[in-house]
Image 1: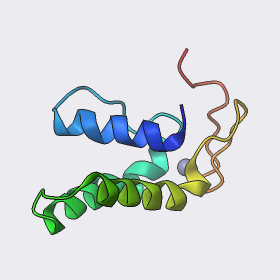
Image 2: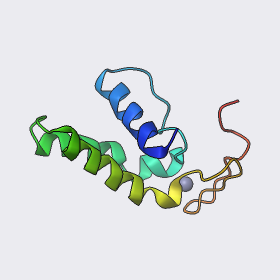
Image 3: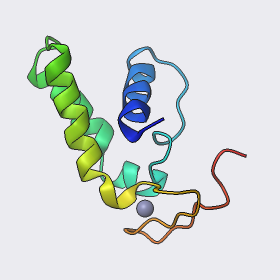
Image 4: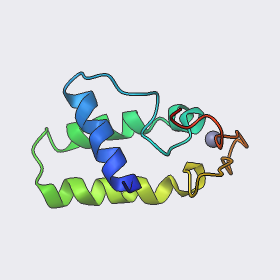
Length: 93
Ligand SMILES: [Zn+2]
C-alpha cells in the first residue's frame, strides 16, 4: 500500500471513531503528532463544512503526502530524516 492509501484509511478510521495507531502506517509517529497533521485534516473538513468532493479530498491527501516526505518510511530500513528515530525494527511485528 502506498502512503496515500495509508493516509486515507487512517483519516477514515478517525472519522468512524475506529482504532488507529498513533500515525498512519509508514509515517513517523513522533513527527506526525508534532506536526499536527490530524489538526490539518480537521481544519480541511471544517473549511469545507464537511462538503467536498473526491477530487478535493484527494488533492488534500496528496498535499499531505508530499509534505510528509521527510518523515515517512521509504524501505524496510528506515530512519526518520527529521527526528532520526529508527523504525527499521519496530514496524508491524
Ligand atoms: Zn520523525
